[in-house]
Length: 160
Image (cartoon, rainbow, N blue to C red; front, side):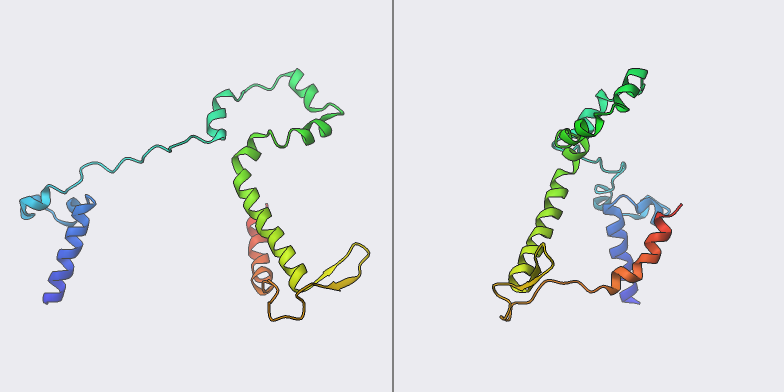
């Protein structure tokens, strides 16, 4: 019985710290005055980000109307060359540049590690042992089972 009272007191004090005491107790008069000082009437405000990302900053300059001249420029024969040279200046690239750099760095590290500690295949298809091939240093691999098991679920999620 004492354990239940202690648990109820802990739940009430925790709830009072988060402003949920009104839902747990029907009468605020039952709560001691010291506890009432900690009751939060309004939910806490979410602090503003310290720096606004490029995507959010450029949102105010986006146009909502796509004119005929824009369509002609979009369908121009040189659009592939123009788009290839503008990838680095793209807003999407600026927004996810850190993530792309991280994934590319990890993938490059794993490829170099496995080429040094395992075997690598050259451009003509020949396999060669790495510098540390016969040492106790293992190659970095992942099991295929999680990927093959999740294929069906991923296909259902991405399907129409």
